[in-house]
Image (cartoon, rainbow, N blue to C red; front, side, top):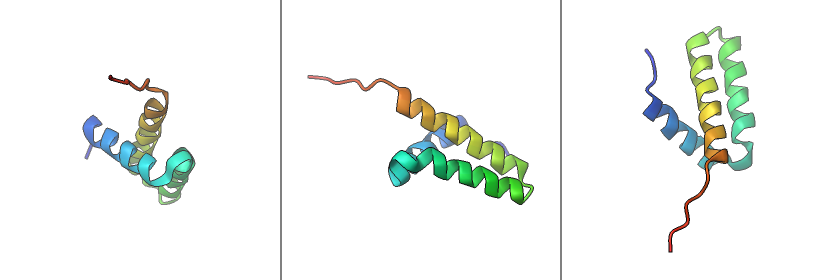
Length: 65
């Protein structure tokens, strides 16, 4: 079953909050775990989360006065 983009974004934010600067590294470990289990769908989901984490890290922050 496909995971929605909204769920991916939420997972990325939660993962980033939990793991901070190590979020991408920890997510890559999850990709490898899923590949070892031969779970391609879950590995693909984690790859989407990695991309979403990258988007969070490069998104400009809006400061309002």
